[in-house]
Image (cartoon, rainbow, N blue to C red; front, side, top):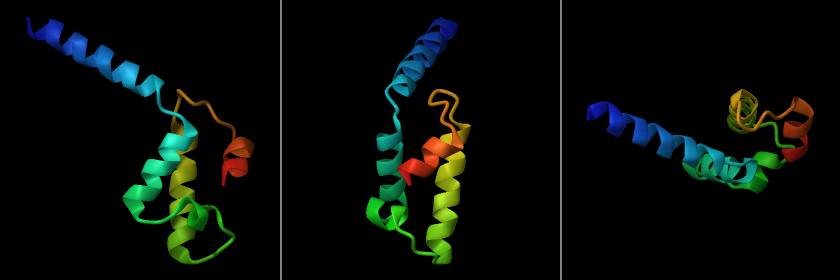
Length: 77
């Protein structure tokens, strides 16, 4: 019985992952870090923003569902 519940939860999580896209990740990332998308995409070289850009690039590149190239990630930012 426990296995069936676990299987159902895993299926639900997999379905939720299918709806993730770059814009939703970007929006949630900015909300969590209390910055705007405009600030993140700016050419500002403040250490906080540079670090957050690098973290976001890592997250987007690591996501196997999105399968984004670095060139595409750069065009987003």
